[in-house]
Length: 305
Length: 318
Image 1 (spheres, rainbow over the protein chains, first blue to last red):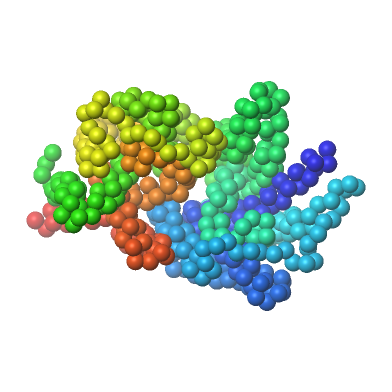
Image 2: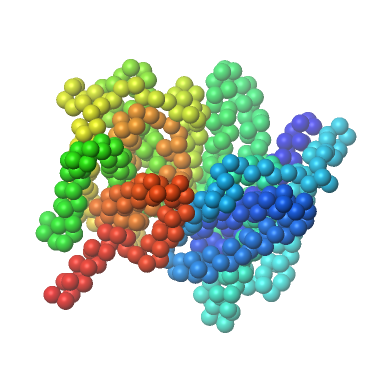
């Protein structure tokens, strides 16, 4: 039972990291109707800059600040230089241009930091384990990720539901033209939302650094998962992204751990050994296909569309 | 077909492609035949995607799946000692058509960005299926022992023979493709792209038309996969990776959507560019990326679209 709880925590931890990625993606998608494949690059930049700055300065908090700032600057720069010209184009053009950006950024980090993976360390005060339940020690660092993720989710909820900026964001998600017609500076709102998304992606990336490897292209697989999340959650919905992130995180983690033994109860051991991992990798895509089949708009489609 | 500037450009392009082995022999670099064989295989894949993407408005972000299925069809039969090419290619076509039928039947119930994502999801499933097939090399892939054997009619082990074999398929699919998009069927597909509701209202079952086009595109791409297996004598799940689907889509856009020959141009330009740039610097992707962005921002109809636009411009003046 403790093992199940531990894996559940792993799932939640993975889920909140996906949420940080998906939140920015779903806002950019929902408000600007823009497919941004380069969102994973901002995740990667966050991880690289944080790992490098932590190694160079020895200060964890400073490395976080530098990484977030770097991602914010890069994000705002590509928004102004590239994306502004893309908002009115169709999704295909956006896919092609941001695919080009992925190639560019993957190569740039390779040029700066080399082709070998960077080693990211866990800061001393987060190393070690904490006993979450009697007899269940759990890595402190992963608990911290869960805490940060939930904290950011609450903050985002506050911003989106209670502030003027959030009101504009919600209005933008349900009817962009009308918001513009009412005299809101749409260009500035877009840059702001995009910068916010960039910072969240970098935060996710810098926390992922010590868990996964910091390497060129690390953002691409997470990006695909984040897309799965926002499609399941309903494009443009932060709440949907949150629920779907946790769902995907837990389903994926649990599937990888338990599916093999569950299958072994029904079929031959060797067949289960083969089918288990395969089915586990496919599980979230099956989940997404099923959601799209029964609820084509996702679980929480934004109102007013 | 009228002898328009486009037709002239297509014929010129194909004539140049037919001469590649000659140039390559003159230059004494047999490597170019290999490179262009690969390019033409991707040209077939990109052209098949253009059939549904450019004419049908179905943005499939999972076209690499059929490339993989076609190549696995050849590889798996070869693994069991069956190297009869007719059988291998029939399986490649049949299997990719069947998978496309299933994926299309589910995906076409959605549209827009949801269609993009659901086709991606299915391709990811097939990718992970390939990773889990330990009998056939799993993640690492597997070497293919023999080329497809077409009853001794053609030796695909010979690079030049394989090149003309691939070029033959490309020309065949181009001819069939142009006939298809100009047919009543093609008109219905294009109608569904520009206004599906109206097409339904005047009595076309657009879902069935689109599904048929989706299956045709999948089957053609399956052939490209079977050819790829012969070119590389290797198969691995990497063929089906989502970035490969992206690459095929880039070829279509680079060359120009809804032109069929545009994607061929796109495949030649993209892969030749990759090859040339990687000869100068190992960081060629840092150059290719911005080029793609510039193409999107400034060459909106794609490269082949430029020919078309000049043609229209000339006609307007003439």
